[in-house]
Length: 354
Image 1 (spheres, rainbow, N blue to C red):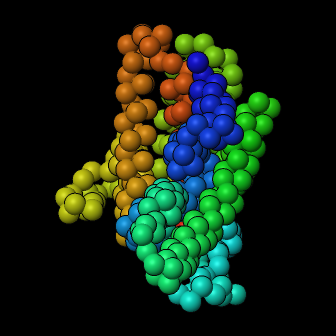
Image 2 (cartoon, rainbow, N blue to C red):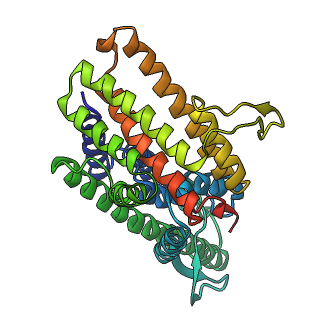
């Protein structure tokens, strides 16, 4: 089964679970996060993950932004962050109930994750069920105890209703995400719009900075369309050459040893293009979690390409699947966009601290 078929199957099953209430909304959103990651749909992943965390949890919010930031420019990051926060506040705003039972016109924002909201609703419903009035009371005590019990039930039901309304708004937004994703997959749009914007940006900037690398991208996609063991091996070779061309433009081979992030001296020769890209980020990317994540992606992609390339050189092309090569091609394209934004000084890397 291809990647797109796998994702479509996951989307269809998740939609069915949402429509039939077979899964809690929090479980549905976890599946949606998987879908967004598989499709490199970072903008959807951003707001979906926000729904699952306590917004004051700085560790989780920082880690999430570190994952998102390398894929956006600073301007894109700030614009989309404003939209995501605006929607988040709007859907989580609800009425405030005072101790005297009056409803305040001012709104409060529910900051907890969807899973915790579900737990709170369950507790409130149980609280309503547990409120009882003892038997055998005299009429006066019975009146006041009954009134107190009714007030407590009303307050608990009111709070539960407000939280349920919040979940319903989130539920509708999740449904829209799933239904739009399903349509995109059925109509052959295998990647989210952010990838298409990234592709246009990479094509334009590579044409200006490194035309040779752009030619190699074209060669990669031409080989992938042929879909034979030999063409897949050649596509991998083109991916490696593409990264080397980009490294040659951003960080040419050094004529003397260079001190890396670990304080060690290394020879950054022509052949060590991955090490040169890593050194380029060390020298140019802000010290941040998103910067460290990007360095890790460079190392991982370089190691994966080398591993698959070695298999191809040993004459075992059949062991290299179409999925593996497609993933390498997509990740190469995304990484090129990250590096180009960094080279222009417009990368959102480091914005997790903003």
